[in-house]
Length: 336
Ligand code: NAD
Ligand code: TYD
Figure 1 (spheres, rainbow, N blue to C red):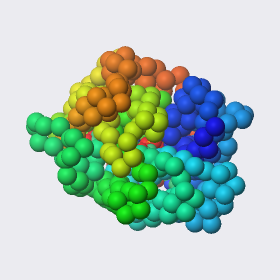
Figure 2: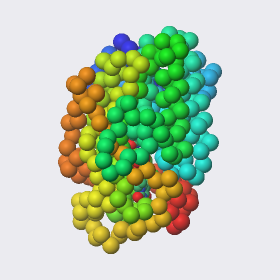
Figure 3: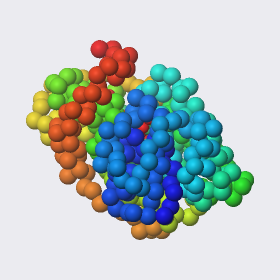
Figure 4: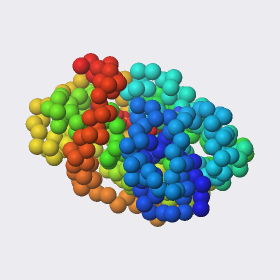
């Protein structure tokens, strides 16, 4: 049995990870430490509640005393760090909490893990640390770190810190850098769920700039299977890129969502561009494919339809989320 501290497990990717992994395996005992920020939601974990190999603790990864207590209490030997402030637009509105959680929080986890002789520490990172690509080329693990947003610079800082623990102390760190995820349980501030919910409500779809920025999309379960594989078989001190080679412009995605829902393209509204907007992300995932035998299983055309269906069928889930504080954020970000 592996005692694994999973942080940020009530968010989009972390909750999909926990639900999926507890379904598949009985040799993982998961302690989920999550602060339940606006992005954390225990409803995401309904299918894991009651599982004897799952324990939830509400708390902040920057809280030294709590983190120390948990390592002791649960004899933690493994860490998978999903916890983060994750939205670029919010980081542009204010960067402080991004540095608190993503950098200071990661430092607390690394320091404590080292003291407790943790056997593996997997830092869940993002392709955004590499910055922006031109029309051609792909990010490889050797691409230099060149983040442009407060969000991506905080994630890059955490990556550098984690790697410094490997170099300095021989501490067993692994880093995964994944492209843009989509799927059930994603908070509706992100492109795909935001466009689905606005379309369902016949609200305008705010497209930043010319809509031709490119993202490389991956279904969340493919990402999580890759994380599990790197966690089990990856070489410590290494970075693994994760991506499904599914590049799309934003406008293509938005038109596709409208088409799936049978809505008119008149809902599209071009708005002011995001400051510092990265033009293109695209991942070369040949390292994880060749070394660990991973490959994406979900086809974009099918998984995007499945995702749209999930939001249509889970109105209760998102109605609660978009009431209250989210409306204030929406007004600040979109001016209406
Ligand atoms: P999310 O915003 O949906 O969830 C983040 C979770 O972390 C929430 O449950 C929140 O309550 C928790 N959290 C935030 N601050 C915390 C703190 N101080 N202490 C404890 N818990 C805290 O994010 P997500 O999309 O699920 O992303 C998870 C991870 O994957 C992040 O590290 C992100 O950088 C990375 N990532 C995301 C994507 C993507 O497309 N969403 C792509 C690549 C990498
Ligand atoms: P997002 O989901 O915020 O992910 P990231 O910025 O981390 O890649 O945005 C994906 C793309 O969609 C990005 O190019 C910005 C664009 N976008 C819009 O055009 N309008 C929106 O309302 C949002 C949220 C994003």
